[in-house]
Image (cartoon, rainbow, N blue to C red; front, side):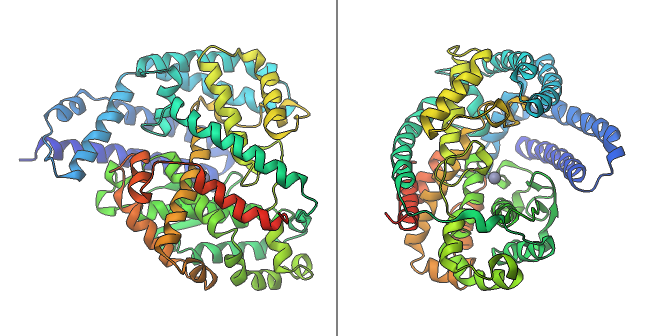
Length: 498
Ligand code: ZN
Protein backbone atom coordinates (compact mmCIF):
# COMPACT_ATOMS: atom_id res chain seq x y z
CA UNK A 1 0.00 0.00 0.00
CA UNK A 2 1.23 3.45 -0.85
CA UNK A 3 2.19 5.63 2.11
CA UNK A 4 0.60 9.02 2.75
CA UNK A 5 3.82 10.64 1.47
CA UNK A 6 3.66 8.68 -1.80
CA UNK A 7 -0.03 9.57 -2.26
CA UNK A 8 0.77 13.18 -1.54
CA UNK A 9 3.57 13.23 -4.12
CA UNK A 10 1.34 11.72 -6.79
CA UNK A 11 -1.11 14.57 -6.17
CA UNK A 12 1.71 17.10 -6.28
CA UNK A 13 2.96 15.65 -9.56
CA UNK A 14 -0.55 15.93 -11.02
CA UNK A 15 -0.64 19.60 -10.05
CA UNK A 16 2.76 19.99 -11.75
CA UNK A 17 1.45 18.27 -14.88
CA UNK A 18 -1.50 20.68 -14.98
CA UNK A 19 0.79 23.62 -14.34
CA UNK A 20 3.12 22.71 -17.19
CA UNK A 21 0.19 22.01 -19.52
CA UNK A 22 -0.89 25.58 -18.81
CA UNK A 23 2.67 26.69 -19.55
CA UNK A 24 2.49 24.97 -22.94
CA UNK A 25 -0.77 26.78 -23.76
CA UNK A 26 0.90 30.06 -22.78
CA UNK A 27 4.02 29.33 -24.80
CA UNK A 28 1.93 28.49 -27.85
CA UNK A 29 -0.09 31.68 -27.44
CA UNK A 30 3.12 33.76 -27.41
CA UNK A 31 4.76 31.95 -30.33
CA UNK A 32 2.59 30.23 -32.94
CA UNK A 33 -1.10 30.57 -32.09
CA UNK A 34 -3.06 32.32 -34.86
CA UNK A 35 -4.73 35.57 -33.69
CA UNK A 36 -8.24 34.12 -33.85
CA UNK A 37 -7.32 31.40 -31.38
CA UNK A 38 -7.34 33.83 -28.46
CA UNK A 39 -10.97 33.34 -27.35
CA UNK A 40 -10.73 29.56 -27.12
CA UNK A 41 -7.31 29.85 -25.52
CA UNK A 42 -8.60 32.12 -22.75
CA UNK A 43 -11.33 29.53 -22.00
CA UNK A 44 -8.85 26.65 -21.99
CA UNK A 45 -6.51 28.50 -19.65
CA UNK A 46 -9.32 29.55 -17.29
CA UNK A 47 -10.62 25.96 -17.10
CA UNK A 48 -7.24 24.40 -16.37
CA UNK A 49 -6.33 27.14 -13.86
CA UNK A 50 -9.54 26.44 -11.96
CA UNK A 51 -8.88 22.69 -11.89
CA UNK A 52 -5.31 23.29 -10.71
CA UNK A 53 -6.42 25.58 -7.89
CA UNK A 54 -9.10 23.12 -6.76
CA UNK A 55 -6.55 20.31 -6.69
CA UNK A 56 -4.06 22.43 -4.77
CA UNK A 57 -6.49 23.27 -1.95
CA UNK A 58 -8.22 19.87 -1.85
CA UNK A 59 -8.81 18.79 1.79
CA UNK A 60 -7.11 15.50 0.88
CA UNK A 61 -3.86 17.42 0.43
CA UNK A 62 -4.19 18.76 3.96
CA UNK A 63 -4.94 15.27 5.32
CA UNK A 64 -1.98 13.69 3.50
CA UNK A 65 0.30 16.51 4.68
CA UNK A 66 -0.74 15.79 8.27
CA UNK A 67 -0.25 12.07 7.86
CA UNK A 68 2.96 12.03 5.84
CA UNK A 69 5.84 10.63 7.87
CA UNK A 70 9.31 11.65 6.79
CA UNK A 71 12.64 10.38 7.98
CA UNK A 72 14.88 12.94 9.64
CA UNK A 73 17.70 12.18 7.19
CA UNK A 74 15.54 11.85 4.07
CA UNK A 75 16.13 15.34 2.72
CA UNK A 76 14.15 14.68 -0.45
CA UNK A 77 10.95 13.84 1.42
CA UNK A 78 11.49 16.59 3.97
CA UNK A 79 11.95 19.20 1.24
CA UNK A 80 8.94 17.98 -0.70
CA UNK A 81 6.67 18.02 2.33
CA UNK A 82 7.93 21.39 3.58
CA UNK A 83 7.39 23.12 0.23
CA UNK A 84 4.07 21.38 -0.47
CA UNK A 85 2.82 22.54 2.92
CA UNK A 86 3.92 26.06 2.15
CA UNK A 87 2.17 26.06 -1.25
CA UNK A 88 -0.96 24.54 0.22
CA UNK A 89 -1.15 26.99 3.09
CA UNK A 90 -0.59 30.06 0.94
CA UNK A 91 -3.33 28.93 -1.46
CA UNK A 92 -5.78 27.70 1.19
CA UNK A 93 -5.58 30.90 3.23
CA UNK A 94 -6.99 32.92 0.35
CA UNK A 95 -10.79 33.02 0.01
CA UNK A 96 -11.83 31.89 -3.47
CA UNK A 97 -13.72 35.16 -3.95
CA UNK A 98 -10.55 37.17 -3.33
CA UNK A 99 -8.59 35.04 -5.83
CA UNK A 100 -11.31 35.64 -8.41
CA UNK A 101 -11.49 39.37 -7.67
CA UNK A 102 -7.73 39.68 -8.04
CA UNK A 103 -7.72 37.79 -11.35
CA UNK A 104 -10.66 39.79 -12.68
CA UNK A 105 -9.28 43.18 -11.57
CA UNK A 106 -5.85 42.48 -12.98
CA UNK A 107 -7.32 41.54 -16.37
CA UNK A 108 -8.98 44.98 -16.45
CA UNK A 109 -5.91 46.66 -14.98
CA UNK A 110 -3.60 45.25 -17.67
CA UNK A 111 -5.82 46.73 -20.31
CA UNK A 112 -6.04 50.10 -18.52
CA UNK A 113 -2.28 50.11 -17.95
CA UNK A 114 -1.58 49.53 -21.66
CA UNK A 115 -3.85 52.49 -22.55
CA UNK A 116 -2.42 54.68 -19.80
CA UNK A 117 1.12 53.97 -20.95
CA UNK A 118 0.26 54.59 -24.61
CA UNK A 119 -1.23 57.98 -23.70
CA UNK A 120 1.16 58.61 -20.83
CA UNK A 121 -1.81 59.34 -18.59
CA UNK A 122 -1.58 57.88 -15.09
CA UNK A 123 -5.21 58.78 -14.29
CA UNK A 124 -6.43 56.06 -16.71
CA UNK A 125 -4.65 53.42 -14.59
CA UNK A 126 -4.91 54.82 -11.07
CA UNK A 127 -8.49 53.72 -10.13
CA UNK A 128 -7.73 50.08 -10.99
CA UNK A 129 -4.32 50.29 -9.36
CA UNK A 130 -6.02 51.50 -6.17
CA UNK A 131 -8.44 48.59 -6.34
CA UNK A 132 -5.60 46.10 -6.93
CA UNK A 133 -3.67 47.51 -3.98
CA UNK A 134 -6.73 47.19 -1.77
CA UNK A 135 -7.22 43.54 -2.80
CA UNK A 136 -3.51 42.83 -2.41
CA UNK A 137 -3.56 44.30 1.10
CA UNK A 138 -6.37 41.88 1.92
CA UNK A 139 -4.29 39.09 0.42
CA UNK A 140 -1.33 40.00 2.66
CA UNK A 141 -3.62 40.01 5.72
CA UNK A 142 -4.95 36.54 4.88
CA UNK A 143 -1.49 35.11 4.29
CA UNK A 144 -0.08 36.73 7.41
CA UNK A 145 3.32 38.23 8.25
CA UNK A 146 5.39 38.98 11.31
CA UNK A 147 6.64 42.53 10.71
CA UNK A 148 4.83 44.27 7.85
CA UNK A 149 2.25 43.41 5.14
CA UNK A 150 4.82 43.80 2.34
CA UNK A 151 6.69 40.77 3.76
CA UNK A 152 3.80 38.47 2.86
CA UNK A 153 4.11 39.60 -0.76
CA UNK A 154 7.90 39.34 -1.05
CA UNK A 155 7.70 35.84 0.39
CA UNK A 156 5.71 34.68 -2.61
CA UNK A 157 8.64 35.28 -4.95
CA UNK A 158 11.64 34.98 -2.63
CA UNK A 159 10.63 32.54 0.10
CA UNK A 160 12.10 33.44 3.47
CA UNK A 161 13.20 36.98 2.51
CA UNK A 162 11.81 40.01 4.40
CA UNK A 163 11.55 43.74 3.64
CA UNK A 164 13.81 44.68 6.53
CA UNK A 165 16.53 42.32 5.42
CA UNK A 166 16.33 43.45 1.78
CA UNK A 167 16.25 47.08 2.87
CA UNK A 168 19.52 46.57 4.76
CA UNK A 169 21.22 45.14 1.68
CA UNK A 170 19.71 47.73 -0.67
CA UNK A 171 20.68 50.71 1.51
CA UNK A 172 24.38 49.93 1.12
CA UNK A 173 24.01 48.93 -2.50
CA UNK A 174 22.30 52.21 -3.24
CA UNK A 175 24.99 54.37 -1.59
CA UNK A 176 27.92 52.55 -3.15
CA UNK A 177 26.30 52.42 -6.58
CA UNK A 178 25.48 56.13 -6.60
CA UNK A 179 29.05 56.99 -5.54
CA UNK A 180 30.68 54.80 -8.19
CA UNK A 181 28.22 55.97 -10.85
CA UNK A 182 29.27 59.56 -10.22
CA UNK A 183 32.93 58.67 -10.83
CA UNK A 184 32.01 57.02 -14.13
CA UNK A 185 29.78 59.84 -15.36
CA UNK A 186 32.41 62.43 -14.39
CA UNK A 187 35.12 60.65 -16.36
CA UNK A 188 36.18 62.15 -19.68
CA UNK A 189 36.90 58.68 -21.10
CA UNK A 190 33.69 57.13 -22.37
CA UNK A 191 33.04 54.13 -24.62
CA UNK A 192 30.99 54.65 -27.77
CA UNK A 193 27.78 52.68 -27.75
CA UNK A 194 26.54 53.90 -31.12
CA UNK A 195 28.16 50.98 -33.00
CA UNK A 196 25.51 48.72 -31.48
CA UNK A 197 22.71 50.61 -33.22
CA UNK A 198 24.13 50.11 -36.71
CA UNK A 199 22.39 47.66 -39.05
CA UNK A 200 22.60 43.98 -38.05
CA UNK A 201 20.60 41.75 -40.46
CA UNK A 202 18.22 39.36 -38.75
CA UNK A 203 19.38 36.25 -40.63
CA UNK A 204 22.91 36.52 -39.24
CA UNK A 205 21.64 37.41 -35.77
CA UNK A 206 19.64 34.19 -35.78
CA UNK A 207 22.70 32.16 -36.66
CA UNK A 208 24.82 33.79 -33.97
CA UNK A 209 22.12 33.56 -31.27
CA UNK A 210 21.74 29.85 -31.83
CA UNK A 211 25.49 29.43 -31.83
CA UNK A 212 25.77 31.22 -28.47
CA UNK A 213 23.02 29.10 -26.92
CA UNK A 214 24.85 25.98 -28.15
CA UNK A 215 28.19 27.26 -26.89
CA UNK A 216 26.74 27.77 -23.41
CA UNK A 217 25.51 24.15 -23.59
CA UNK A 218 21.79 24.71 -24.05
CA UNK A 219 20.54 21.21 -24.89
CA UNK A 220 18.48 21.45 -28.08
CA UNK A 221 17.32 17.85 -27.60
CA UNK A 222 15.65 19.11 -24.41
CA UNK A 223 14.49 22.52 -25.54
CA UNK A 224 13.72 25.00 -28.29
CA UNK A 225 14.59 28.57 -29.24
CA UNK A 226 11.78 30.62 -30.83
CA UNK A 227 10.87 34.26 -31.43
CA UNK A 228 8.51 36.46 -29.34
CA UNK A 229 7.99 40.15 -28.63
CA UNK A 230 8.91 39.70 -24.95
CA UNK A 231 11.60 37.03 -24.48
CA UNK A 232 11.07 34.41 -21.79
CA UNK A 233 11.95 30.90 -20.66
CA UNK A 234 9.33 28.34 -19.76
CA UNK A 235 9.45 24.73 -18.66
CA UNK A 236 7.03 22.28 -20.23
CA UNK A 237 8.37 18.89 -19.22
CA UNK A 238 10.89 19.08 -16.38
CA UNK A 239 14.46 19.40 -17.64
CA UNK A 240 13.53 17.48 -20.78
CA UNK A 241 11.52 20.25 -22.44
CA UNK A 242 12.59 23.83 -21.72
CA UNK A 243 11.61 26.54 -24.21
CA UNK A 244 13.33 29.89 -24.60
CA UNK A 245 12.52 32.80 -26.86
CA UNK A 246 14.35 35.85 -28.13
CA UNK A 247 13.71 38.82 -30.42
CA UNK A 248 15.71 40.24 -33.30
CA UNK A 249 16.01 44.02 -33.63
CA UNK A 250 18.06 44.88 -36.68
CA UNK A 251 19.25 48.21 -35.32
CA UNK A 252 19.92 47.11 -31.74
CA UNK A 253 22.54 44.36 -31.53
CA UNK A 254 22.25 43.73 -27.78
CA UNK A 255 18.62 42.61 -27.73
CA UNK A 256 19.04 39.22 -29.36
CA UNK A 257 22.64 38.43 -28.39
CA UNK A 258 22.40 39.15 -24.67
CA UNK A 259 18.70 38.34 -24.48
CA UNK A 260 19.42 34.85 -25.83
CA UNK A 261 22.28 34.32 -23.40
CA UNK A 262 20.05 35.52 -20.55
CA UNK A 263 17.24 33.11 -21.36
CA UNK A 264 19.78 30.35 -21.98
CA UNK A 265 20.98 30.91 -18.42
CA UNK A 266 17.44 30.40 -17.11
CA UNK A 267 17.12 27.28 -19.29
CA UNK A 268 20.43 25.76 -18.13
CA UNK A 269 19.10 25.91 -14.58
CA UNK A 270 15.83 24.20 -15.58
CA UNK A 271 17.65 21.60 -17.69
CA UNK A 272 19.96 20.90 -14.75
CA UNK A 273 17.29 20.31 -12.11
CA UNK A 274 17.13 16.66 -11.02
CA UNK A 275 14.82 14.91 -13.48
CA UNK A 276 14.02 12.05 -11.16
CA UNK A 277 12.18 14.64 -9.03
CA UNK A 278 10.27 16.21 -11.92
CA UNK A 279 6.99 17.96 -10.92
CA UNK A 280 7.90 17.96 -7.20
CA UNK A 281 9.65 20.73 -5.20
CA UNK A 282 12.96 18.80 -5.26
CA UNK A 283 12.86 19.13 -9.05
CA UNK A 284 12.11 22.86 -9.02
CA UNK A 285 14.05 26.13 -8.77
CA UNK A 286 14.67 27.79 -5.38
CA UNK A 287 13.27 31.27 -6.04
CA UNK A 288 13.00 33.99 -8.65
CA UNK A 289 16.14 35.65 -7.28
CA UNK A 290 18.21 32.48 -7.64
CA UNK A 291 16.73 31.91 -11.11
CA UNK A 292 17.71 35.41 -12.12
CA UNK A 293 21.25 34.85 -10.80
CA UNK A 294 21.65 32.03 -13.32
CA UNK A 295 20.45 34.04 -16.30
CA UNK A 296 22.44 37.13 -15.31
CA UNK A 297 25.65 35.22 -14.74
CA UNK A 298 25.64 33.78 -18.26
CA UNK A 299 24.52 37.07 -19.78
CA UNK A 300 26.91 39.37 -17.94
CA UNK A 301 29.77 37.69 -16.09
CA UNK A 302 30.28 35.39 -19.09
CA UNK A 303 28.56 36.99 -22.10
CA UNK A 304 29.81 40.53 -21.52
CA UNK A 305 33.33 39.44 -20.56
CA UNK A 306 36.35 40.25 -22.67
CA UNK A 307 37.32 36.56 -22.69
CA UNK A 308 34.03 35.56 -24.32
CA UNK A 309 34.44 38.08 -27.12
CA UNK A 310 38.11 37.29 -27.62
CA UNK A 311 36.74 34.03 -28.94
CA UNK A 312 33.62 35.29 -30.74
CA UNK A 313 34.36 38.79 -32.00
CA UNK A 314 36.10 37.81 -35.25
CA UNK A 315 33.17 35.70 -36.24
CA UNK A 316 30.70 38.48 -35.38
CA UNK A 317 32.76 40.89 -37.49
CA UNK A 318 32.64 38.40 -40.39
CA UNK A 319 28.87 38.02 -40.07
CA UNK A 320 28.27 41.78 -39.84
CA UNK A 321 31.00 43.31 -42.02
CA UNK A 322 29.16 46.62 -42.51
CA UNK A 323 28.47 47.16 -38.80
CA UNK A 324 31.64 45.76 -37.27
CA UNK A 325 34.22 45.79 -40.09
CA UNK A 326 35.90 48.97 -38.80
CA UNK A 327 35.46 48.21 -35.08
CA UNK A 328 38.19 46.89 -32.78
CA UNK A 329 37.61 44.30 -30.09
CA UNK A 330 38.37 46.96 -27.46
CA UNK A 331 35.81 49.38 -28.89
CA UNK A 332 33.22 46.61 -29.09
CA UNK A 333 33.92 45.47 -25.54
CA UNK A 334 33.47 49.08 -24.33
CA UNK A 335 30.24 49.47 -26.32
CA UNK A 336 28.61 46.43 -24.71
CA UNK A 337 29.73 47.69 -21.30
CA UNK A 338 28.63 51.31 -21.18
CA UNK A 339 27.09 52.79 -18.04
CA UNK A 340 24.61 55.63 -18.37
CA UNK A 341 21.57 56.69 -16.31
CA UNK A 342 18.42 56.04 -18.32
CA UNK A 343 14.66 56.06 -17.76
CA UNK A 344 13.74 52.50 -18.69
CA UNK A 345 14.63 49.64 -16.34
CA UNK A 346 14.80 46.89 -18.95
CA UNK A 347 17.27 48.90 -21.01
CA UNK A 348 19.50 49.84 -18.08
CA UNK A 349 23.15 48.78 -17.80
CA UNK A 350 24.56 46.40 -15.21
CA UNK A 351 25.34 49.14 -12.67
CA UNK A 352 22.36 51.50 -12.83
CA UNK A 353 19.85 48.67 -13.15
CA UNK A 354 19.77 48.08 -9.40
CA UNK A 355 18.82 51.71 -8.76
CA UNK A 356 15.69 51.21 -10.87
CA UNK A 357 14.83 48.21 -8.72
CA UNK A 358 15.52 49.97 -5.41
CA UNK A 359 13.20 52.80 -6.46
CA UNK A 360 10.35 50.33 -7.09
CA UNK A 361 11.03 48.45 -3.88
CA UNK A 362 10.87 51.67 -1.84
CA UNK A 363 7.69 52.88 -3.52
CA UNK A 364 5.89 49.54 -3.10
CA UNK A 365 6.89 49.37 0.54
CA UNK A 366 5.58 52.90 1.17
CA UNK A 367 2.31 51.98 -0.55
CA UNK A 368 1.80 48.93 1.65
CA UNK A 369 2.85 50.72 4.83
CA UNK A 370 0.32 53.47 4.14
CA UNK A 371 2.99 56.15 3.64
CA UNK A 372 2.14 56.81 0.01
CA UNK A 373 -1.17 57.32 -1.83
CA UNK A 374 -1.70 56.04 -5.36
CA UNK A 375 -2.26 59.52 -6.77
CA UNK A 376 1.13 60.64 -5.47
CA UNK A 377 3.06 57.85 -7.22
CA UNK A 378 4.08 59.82 -10.35
CA UNK A 379 5.54 62.66 -8.34
CA UNK A 380 7.26 60.34 -5.86
CA UNK A 381 8.71 58.35 -8.76
CA UNK A 382 10.21 61.41 -10.40
CA UNK A 383 11.71 62.71 -7.17
CA UNK A 384 13.36 59.35 -6.58
CA UNK A 385 14.66 59.14 -10.16
CA UNK A 386 16.31 62.51 -9.74
CA UNK A 387 17.69 61.48 -6.39
CA UNK A 388 19.09 58.11 -7.52
CA UNK A 389 19.93 58.60 -11.17
CA UNK A 390 20.07 62.35 -11.59
CA UNK A 391 17.44 62.42 -14.33
CA UNK A 392 13.71 63.19 -14.43
CA UNK A 393 11.41 61.29 -16.82
CA UNK A 394 9.77 63.59 -19.39
CA UNK A 395 6.45 61.77 -18.92
CA UNK A 396 4.85 58.94 -16.93
CA UNK A 397 5.15 56.47 -19.83
CA UNK A 398 8.90 56.67 -19.29
CA UNK A 399 8.37 56.86 -15.55
CA UNK A 400 5.91 55.06 -13.29
CA UNK A 401 3.91 53.51 -16.14
CA UNK A 402 6.77 51.63 -17.80
CA UNK A 403 6.44 48.19 -16.14
CA UNK A 404 3.59 45.71 -16.46
CA UNK A 405 4.06 44.15 -12.98
CA UNK A 406 1.66 46.31 -10.95
CA UNK A 407 -1.16 45.78 -13.43
CA UNK A 408 -0.71 42.04 -12.91
CA UNK A 409 -0.91 42.50 -9.16
CA UNK A 410 2.72 41.32 -8.87
CA UNK A 411 3.78 43.43 -5.88
CA UNK A 412 6.95 42.26 -4.15
CA UNK A 413 8.46 40.93 -7.38
CA UNK A 414 10.95 43.64 -8.33
CA UNK A 415 13.41 43.06 -5.50
CA UNK A 416 14.24 39.63 -6.92
CA UNK A 417 15.86 41.23 -9.98
CA UNK A 418 18.47 43.05 -7.89
CA UNK A 419 18.88 40.11 -5.53
CA UNK A 420 19.61 38.05 -8.65
CA UNK A 421 22.45 40.41 -9.57
CA UNK A 422 23.95 40.12 -6.08
CA UNK A 423 23.60 36.33 -5.96
CA UNK A 424 25.15 36.06 -9.44
CA UNK A 425 28.22 38.07 -8.42
CA UNK A 426 28.67 36.18 -5.15
CA UNK A 427 28.33 32.76 -6.82
CA UNK A 428 30.60 33.75 -9.69
CA UNK A 429 33.35 34.99 -7.36
CA UNK A 430 33.32 31.60 -5.67
CA UNK A 431 33.27 29.74 -8.98
CA UNK A 432 36.36 31.72 -10.05
CA UNK A 433 38.12 30.64 -6.86
CA UNK A 434 37.17 27.01 -7.43
CA UNK A 435 38.03 27.04 -11.15
CA UNK A 436 41.35 28.95 -11.39
CA UNK A 437 41.48 28.84 -15.22
CA UNK A 438 37.81 29.83 -15.62
CA UNK A 439 38.49 32.74 -18.00
CA UNK A 440 40.95 30.67 -20.05
CA UNK A 441 38.19 28.15 -20.49
CA UNK A 442 35.70 30.88 -21.48
CA UNK A 443 38.28 32.23 -23.94
CA UNK A 444 38.51 28.72 -25.41
CA UNK A 445 34.68 28.64 -25.72
CA UNK A 446 34.57 25.84 -23.17
CA UNK A 447 31.69 26.62 -20.79
CA UNK A 448 31.43 23.18 -19.26
CA UNK A 449 33.56 23.89 -16.16
CA UNK A 450 31.28 26.73 -15.02
CA UNK A 451 28.12 24.80 -15.93
CA UNK A 452 29.32 21.74 -14.02
CA UNK A 453 30.08 23.94 -11.03
CA UNK A 454 26.54 25.37 -11.12
CA UNK A 455 25.04 21.91 -11.57
CA UNK A 456 26.95 20.57 -8.59
CA UNK A 457 26.47 23.53 -6.24
CA UNK A 458 23.03 24.85 -7.18
CA UNK A 459 20.98 23.00 -9.81
CA UNK A 460 21.03 19.47 -8.41
CA UNK A 461 19.60 20.58 -5.06
CA UNK A 462 16.19 21.65 -6.37
CA UNK A 463 14.41 23.42 -3.49
CA UNK A 464 16.37 21.65 -0.77
CA UNK A 465 17.80 24.97 0.50
CA UNK A 466 16.14 28.37 0.70
CA UNK A 467 17.97 31.16 -1.16
CA UNK A 468 19.76 32.63 1.88
CA UNK A 469 20.85 29.21 3.06
CA UNK A 470 22.04 28.21 -0.39
CA UNK A 471 24.21 31.31 -0.78
CA UNK A 472 25.80 30.73 2.59
CA UNK A 473 26.35 27.06 1.92
CA UNK A 474 27.93 27.60 -1.50
CA UNK A 475 30.01 30.70 -0.79
CA UNK A 476 30.59 30.43 2.96
CA UNK A 477 29.02 33.85 3.56
CA UNK A 478 25.54 35.33 3.80
CA UNK A 479 24.44 37.55 0.93
CA UNK A 480 26.57 40.72 0.73
CA UNK A 481 27.04 43.45 -1.84
CA UNK A 482 30.85 43.22 -1.90
CA UNK A 483 31.24 40.66 -4.69
CA UNK A 484 28.89 42.69 -6.90
CA UNK A 485 30.59 46.00 -6.13
CA UNK A 486 34.06 44.63 -6.78
CA UNK A 487 32.83 42.98 -9.97
CA UNK A 488 31.45 46.26 -11.38
CA UNK A 489 34.44 48.28 -10.21
CA UNK A 490 36.95 45.87 -11.74
CA UNK A 491 35.01 45.81 -14.94
CA UNK A 492 34.01 49.43 -15.49
CA UNK A 493 36.93 51.37 -14.00
CA UNK A 494 39.37 50.40 -16.82
CA UNK A 495 36.75 51.01 -19.51
CA UNK A 496 36.18 54.51 -18.13
CA UNK A 497 39.90 55.20 -17.67
CA UNK A 498 39.72 55.27 -13.84
ZN1 ZN B 1 15.47 36.74 -16.31
